[in-house]
Amino acid sequence: MSSRMPPLYALRAFEAAARCGSFTLAADSLNITQSAVSRHVKTLEQSLGCKVFERKGSRLALTEPGRLLAEELKLGFRIIENACVAVGAGSGSLRLKAPSTLTVRWLLGVLEGYHQAFPDHRIQLTSAWMDVDAVDFHAEPFDCAILLCHGEPGSEVESLRLFDEWLVPVCMSQSGDDRPWSIERLRAAELIHPSRDRRDWKRWLERTGHAESVPWQRGKLFDTLELGISAAAQGHGVSMADLSLIGPELARGTLMMPVRTAVRSGGSYHLIWPRHLGESRALHHLKGYLRERLPSADDADVLRLD
Image 1 (cartoon, rainbow, N blue to C red):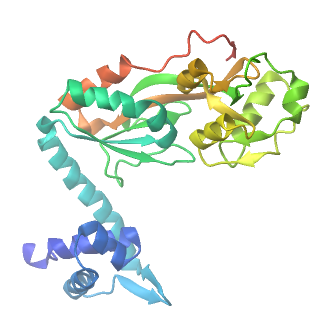
Image 2 (cartoon, rainbow, N blue to C red):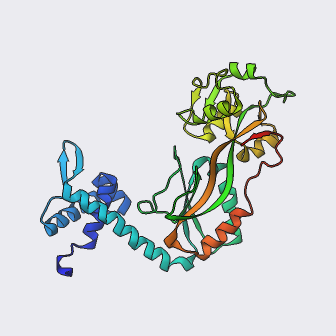
Image 3 (cartoon, rainbow, N blue to C red):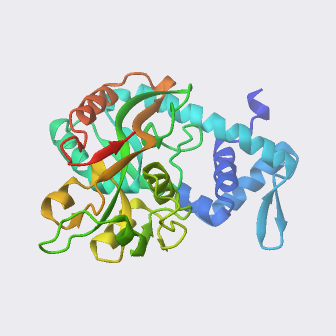
């Protein structure tokens, strides 16, 4: 059986090339040369007796046998990787994925304290832009993730609910004037949308009963909540924000809430991890540390609409 098995290095090079769609990108991810990837793939094709890639103009495409092999290898290498992580769990290292706005506004500071409290338990953080928060533990190199979930995260993962998202409008503070705005003034303001589908303003206006009076379809479009909040703080309009993540700006007076009504988005931040990871010491400590340092907006003077 082993004599029919292609070399592991050839399988690894092929899997990377199939995943990246490029020999050059695969070479970068494996820290080898592009020509080495090409040689390894050729070795694999000779061993299998079939082509796994074909050229379509300048584009590299998988053949049908290549597609089937790539799907199985993606799972196979993930299983190997998980086994190595499980064996090395005592090292206390966790690979964590988190959305960019949450990272900048809360998580970075918390992890700095975590590393001081648990110097032997390192968190390898990847902050990623996600229009809809998601992680694929079979295909992505992460042991856990913090995601904004609408509903339960799923049956294949374990989770710890952290805090809810409450949407509230924010804008640059006017010196000496922190009075709530009227809806008429909001109607005339420049809206800032933290997502291209404008879902946050639409949800807030519908829940507060002003969807017909304030034209939410207009305004500036951004890719992240962080960019929208930053633009609002610079005086470019009124953005939606997560009430739990703007406490420092409200306290400093760099942001204000023109309308003191917060609407629950229906989403909650969860720490999630695959069931097979189990309860490593690093994960146990991380769960407890996050739970004790959650951002809170309980003392904010707002009307909450659940």
